[in-house]
Amino acid sequence: MLSEPSPHKAADYKHREDLIDALLCAWTAALWSRHGLARCQVLGADSLLPPGQAPTIIAPARPEQRRD
Image (cartoon, rainbow, N blue to C red; front, top):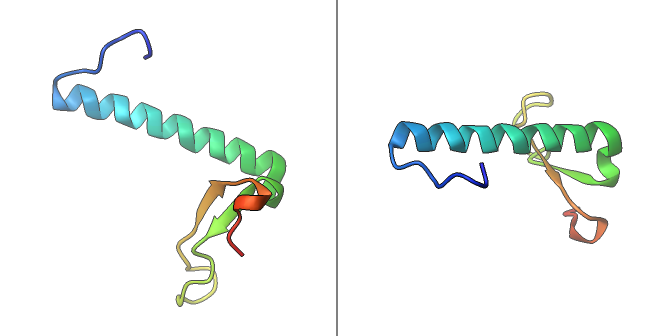
């Protein structure tokens, strides 16, 4: 992907965007699986929705970047 210029057609550009999104999701999942809360933070868990229905995002974070 680095050696190819960005596509001009919208569908091709969207496909590339989807590939990058999938890569970032897989990397974040691997980081969460290996390190858990030591290297990631859970955002959205304190939502007003009932337990188990809260929207959450797992985000990589250094300890000094964490939101408590």
